[in-house]
Image (tube, rainbow, N blue to C red; front, side, top):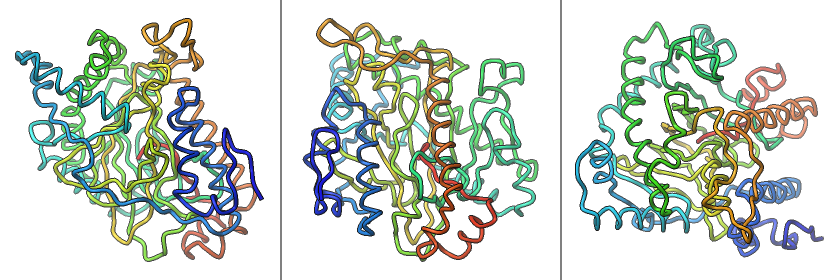
Length: 419
């Protein structure tokens, strides 16, 4: 049989492979008439068909670490701090960022001179200590019991835009620690901190603050690489920005890697760009060539990925980077800094990227509306999955402990938010 999807026809043979339909997906990915999320929706349709045939596996191509663009942006950070920079050096770095962003949608930067390696390790340790607390203690910090979208998300409790798939991750979310009076601006205000672990607040806050100059430098770089004023994007990222930092843990599992239980399903991030550190394998990125690749892991590198807002602002010139996490036999941790803008900022196409021959391709909405729309849709999908008694279709492929939770109706969510 065949099914018309977007601009291409995929056959049964196509749907059983992660590379065929590479050409079809590559054409969609390169199209400036389709957003990255539209490409993912078509991919999700194919995923559903594969799952229905029982043939889908979470495959991806191996790539060498050296094949990923690695860009030393320390000179740009120094300039941001007020130090002079050689103009030729600056243009060379901006050209590297532009090439990687346009052709791949992601690149890596060194931790050296940017984020202290010891502090990163300490934050991983603090998250491990938190997860070791008794469940009744952790429940005090549950995301649903805390204001401002902060706190702990247990296993299987995060919304998803793809029905029928469970996630294996636990998250702890923080953002800029602001007074409660900021709550009138949306998801802003104070963080929640585990009282049982005083070092948790100290180390996590310190790391969050250390990422602020990096975030500001990248905001400026993305604008300057496109020949725009350095403040074009950065002016919309103030202390009221929707800028979450997620501490993510993907537990080890002895279960085979399956499409019904993943670390996190394919998605793009809702903000401008993501800065990610990871200490284990499992992350996969959907390349502009139209197939999944395994993201190499290096403890002294940070991964930078383009998000939805940069795609919308540039009217599709930049494309958000689809990515997912698959289960592995080893625990994986990551720290994701999601760099959004102020909630009331309009994130439709900006004037420099619109013309008579290149009209706006995205609606004009605010950052907060975009996040609410995406999370709302994912939550509705989750509820629909539960109502359809997902356990009946997944019983043969889920661990017993997961099925117990699904049957009870607790701890059952799939994810499609940040890595």
